[in-house]
Length: 288
Image (cartoon, rainbow, N blue to C red; front, side):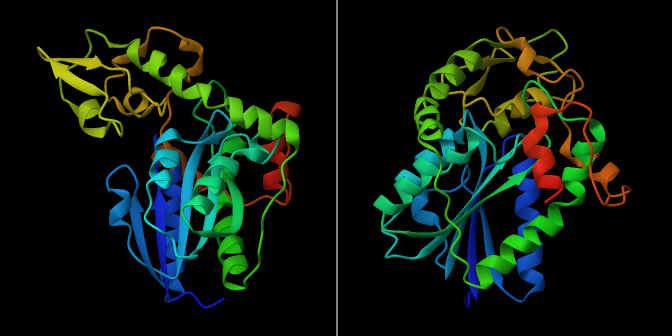
């Protein structure tokens, strides 16, 4: 297919999806293709740049794309059968029930008049509850350019790649909408400790505008989507959850630091995990 212009619509909480978006932008640009990279958290659906191809890039939350992404897609203007590729980003990979994570997004796009021609998954280090072994996290960043190159090649060659998830995965994804309520409750129970220096970074960065400064202290509302950006981006580790504390990684999450470390790691012929089944999707992705 000949695509002279591409619009890349992405949302990123703690930075992994933004990192992948930059990789896509760089490789399209190197091929002489003009790309419009737009953050869905910072534009309105009516502000989407016109192009030959639209790429949706979003993290997976509770077995479906982020709430912000899905809400954005529902409000897009008429697509006039413009081709769209849907790329999900997860820490677990293309395994059950993640295989159906793009189904709602594809449905919303079709209803808005877009032609979904391609879908795929990028795997990045997990920021939720647990992570794969450190060397595997770095490996995910090491192989990212190669995975992105494959996706771009398939798009430009006109490959139509659409998956058919199992019924059980579709059902789990459908119930994943309950994550929206869970995120609301989780966010309302966040609080700032005495280490908070009132810098306002959390207020500025919240994609849902769910945080306000009240008497010099962050106050959290009911619109949280569980992106964890405020928790991991706080320079003083001053924002803590009042409930579900186990989902926060003990050592935090810094994609920029991991990227610097990954740049020093050579690509391996084969990656091996000592953890076994929990990271089956990561191993499958790395060794594909």
